[in-house]
Length: 102
Image (cartoon, rainbow, N blue to C red; front, side, top):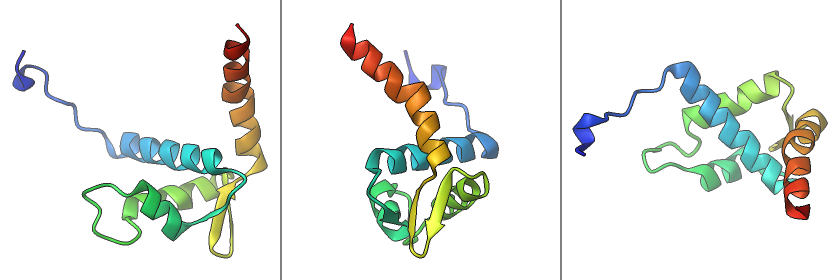
């Protein structure tokens, strides 16, 4: 099959924002209890096309996750809120532990 037979669909802005927020939150939860600065997060999540030290998509994603109550910013550091950590535990960590027991 040729690549032209199955072209990739362009993501809408909302879909790209959701993807970016999911990646940011998942990365910060994986790093928990360590706290990262936004500069450290940008360095760890940098994409090849990013030219800025802190890309717009990352700045927007962090801002929106803070507004939703899923991230907390204290000075220069950002970390997941208790609500985000609890949700992750209930829907992901618990399932992983259950699968490991089987």
